[in-house]
Length: 334
Ligand code: HEM
Image 1 (cartoon, rainbow, N blue to C red):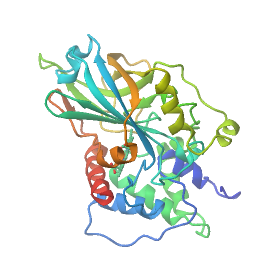
Image 2 (cartoon, rainbow, N blue to C red; image 1 turned 180 degrees about the vertical axis):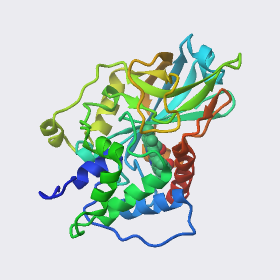
Image 3 (tube, rainbow, N blue to C red; image 1 turned 90 degrees about the vertical axis):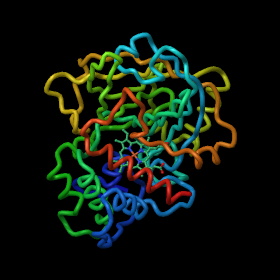
Image 4 (tube, protein in one colour; image 1 turned 30 degrees about the vertical axis):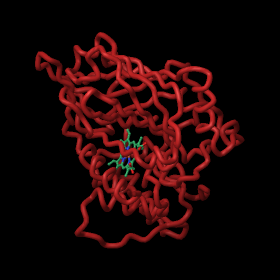
C-alpha cells in the first residue's frame, strides 16, 4: 500500500528494481566482512523472506524449450558457436520479479518479468539473462545494495525523509526507472526483453563491437490495463504459456543493439537511443513446456557470465556482481 504522504510509493520503488512485494521494514545487520554480492543476496532474503528451493530473486517461473536458428548476419558479429548457421536446442525460463515464490502474476510487483535463455552447444552451453525493462535503476553493485537497504530500512514508521526518499533524491536515474510504468503483459510471449548490460562481440576476423541483447516477440506486443491485470488469476501468465505452446510455437527475434561512438558501455542506467543500429542474431522458437517443471527450475542455474568464445563481458561492474550473486543464491536454494 502506498501511504498518501510518501514522496515515492514504496511499491513503485520495489517494482522498478525488479525486487519486491514486502510490506514491512527490515533492519540491516552489520556484515562488513561479506562481499557486496553476498550482502545483496542477504538483503534480498530479508526483503522477500527465505524460501528453501527458490531463487532469491525471480523466484516464480516456468521453463520451456525449443530451438534457436541463427540468422546469416549473426556470424558477422560474433564467432560464437551458436551464431554460425546451425540450429541449437534452447531452454528458457520466464519469471516474475521478486523473491516471492507465490506472487500473483498480474500484480504490479511481478513486473518487470525475466527471461533466461540457455543455448545448448555441441560442447557446453551459454546463457542470456534479460528483463522486460530497458535500463536498470543503478550503475554499480554498491548502489544496488544501497538501494535494497534503503527499501528495507523504509518501514511504515521511518522518519522523514525516509532512507528510500534520500536514495532516490540523490539518484535521479533510479527515480526515473521507479516512476516509469511497467504494465502487465497479456503473455510472457507478448513483451520485449532487454539485456541492459553490454557485452563485447568478436567475429572470426577479430573485429570487436559492443552491444546489448534484445529479445523481441514475433507475436504483437500486448499489455493489459491495470484493471484487467488485477482481475487475472494468480498464475495466469504461467498457465497462458502452456496453453499457447500447445497451439504452436512462441517465437522471439534475438537482436543486438550496437553501441555508437561515445555511448556508455559500462553503465546499465545509460539506455542507448533507439536509432542505434541492430544486428539480427536469429529466431528463438519455443515449442513446449519442460516436463517436471518444478524440478527443472531447481536444477537450472543461469549466469549472465556463462559465455563462450566470441562473446565477452564489458567493463560494466554489474556483470561480475550479478554472476557472483546468482552463484550465492544458487548455493542457498540447493
Ligand atoms: C547487481 C545487479 C543484480 C543482482 C545482484 C541480481 C541478482 C539476482 C539473483 C541473486 C538472482 C537469483 C539467481 C538464482 O538463484 O539462480 C537473479 C535472478 C534473475 N535476474 Fe538478476 N540481478 C541483478 C541484475 C539483473 C539485471 C540487470 C537483469 C536483467 C536485465 C536481471 C535479470 C534476472 C533474471 C531474468 C533472473 C532469473 C533467472 C532465472 O530464471 O534463473 N538481473 N538476479
